Amino acid sequence: MSTPPIVCVIGKKKSGKTTTVVGLVKELTTRGYVVMTVKHGHDFRLDREHTDSWRHRHHGGAGRVVLAGPNQFAVMGDWPASVEQPLEALVADHLADADIVVAEGYKASDLPKIEVFRRAAHAESLIGTGSCSEAAYVAVLTDVPDFSADVPVLSVDGPDRFERLADLVETLLLAG
Image (cartoon, rainbow, N blue to C red; front, top):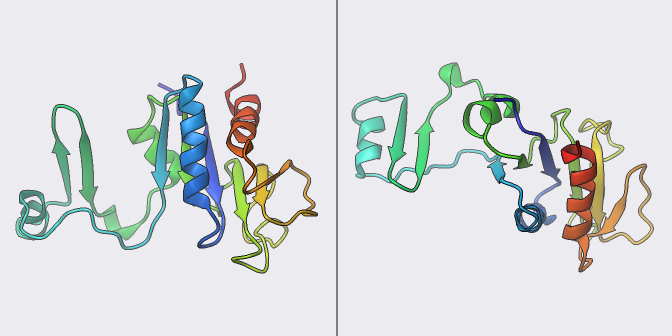
């Protein structure tokens, strides 16, 4: 099975990344695609103290624990030697049956990107600053009316922004 296409939704804190991911995923699933997501975060904890899975990891010392049931599963654990796995490896290992994967974060990757930039939240966007690879930008969503970029620029609050993003993703990543 080949790795599905991946698009990363990037931006600074409180810019609207999660809202954009949810809206884009909803629009793509409405169009019939199997969409899966990855959320990049820092120092989060899924297992709760005193649960069986917590005891497996913290009392027993298991490196990874899989929670499995008839309708869902989760994998919890630590990376080997504390080296974070690349997004592409995570997708290949866990999400290969998707039509497309929408990732929140991973701005340093060379994967296609949608940036969400709100001047109301931050002074500068990421595009043009050298802080992330710009070659694969798909679009920028912004609250700056005269924002200029070499990719489509959409209003971050536009009523049709998710449909327009899905059109771009279909054309650039899902065509053919």
